[in-house]
Image (cartoon, rainbow, N blue to C red; front, top):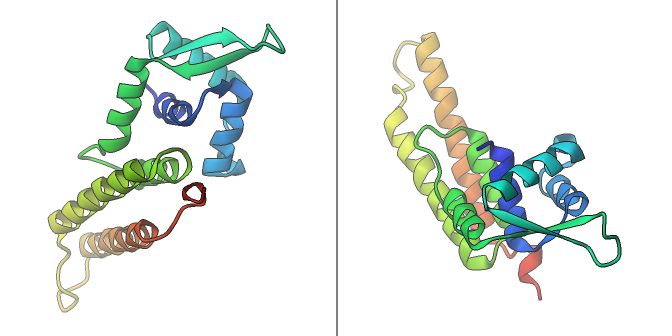
Length: 171
């Protein structure tokens, strides 16, 4: 299943909505530069419905328009995906999960997502172990240092987010 499918499940886990509403929530979460075409959203939701992860129904005001909601299977899948960072993760795997947790989860789930991502990042930093700065510089050592610096920045970002109150926590 594409990452978009899992992202849409998390957005629907927050609350049901039409394809257009979900597209707007996606853009609000990831920024307008990552806006997803409405046809991709609709196609993906249709596929997820065939897989039993979401269900749709006509909206009362506009019967031709569909409103989408998670099924129990979809709720299990979205939570499992959100809390499982792949062993060979990319920075996007972390960024996507954390931004979704900021935008579309309760506080306890947000805290768990941050902790899972932090643990994965710390483990990656331990595995990478760049050479000491006194070692001769090579392309390989420079790449290792860059990777370590990027991981350190992500760790710092996550730690700063973890201590802050989200806009959705105000209520």
